[in-house]
Image (cartoon, rainbow, N blue to C red; front, side):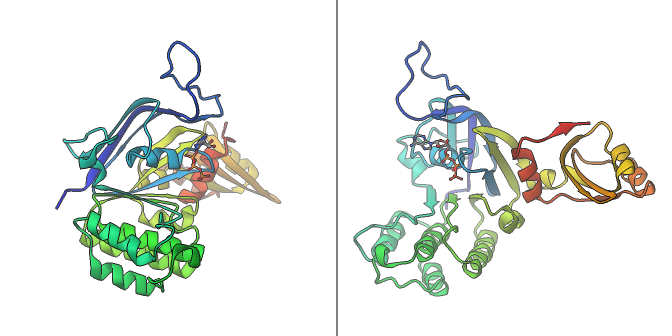
Length: 314
Ligand SMILES: Nc1ncnc2c1ncn2[C@@H]1O[C@H](COP(=O)(O)OP(=O)(O)OP(=O)(O)O)[C@@H](O)[C@H]1O
């Protein structure tokens, strides 16, 4: 069995369209609307579930497409493979045979019954688990005899999820695969992913807007904002990164002195501030003594605050 893949992006830039007429065409310009990634650098640890988060158009799909060798970077380097033996995935069958990118559409073969798509992936993936695929198709109530056009959007996504789970590729990437699924199907997918991952460790990347729903799955996160990697590292660091301070306005102001305020909410005499940076025990105790309640900030809220560009220093 191939060990889980790691991946590394180093100073990666991606610009769509024709190269600009200039001396160094490998340069990407953040102000150019055709630029999808700018100087993106991050490491994806092997055998870990990483959440790739970003607002619409942030560059998530572009980053995931690079890892699956669906496209090449304009600048910088992309490496994928077992730790210590990573290679450029572009036109590299050894690497790409270990990478499964599952997209929301499910990438089903247009004119054939769904069972033909599954047969194709079963032949391609040495670790394909036919029993798991059959059980999941039953769970998601997918009729294998139907052609993709006869399936609902959610059922097509479900087939993609089955391809990703049953294939057990050393790098499995789910790019917003569950967007078409209803809530019970999505929750069943998350549970199946966690259960299978626990038994068959591999590297999983999940991109999503539904951060609240999926954040319990993440061990690491990469947050992309307007083409730049804003945060990369353990999800727990992001969970512990900020704090909410709630209480009488003057006390909250005092407790937040010198910190970057990401969000502010006023309810009559009570103020709630979301601040960047964790509070140490002393600061926490001082705030509590002053009648200020200190709370945690969920990944979803931190993500919204960090990518809304509204942070202000106090
Ligand atoms: N083929 C293309 N030609 C030109 N620009 C593109 C192309 N594909 C993507 N882009 C642009 O690159 C940027 C990043 O797109 P990308 O699809 O990677 O974002 P995303 O984070 O996956 O967004 P979403 O959450 O909306 O799917 C966007 O500004 C997008 O308009």
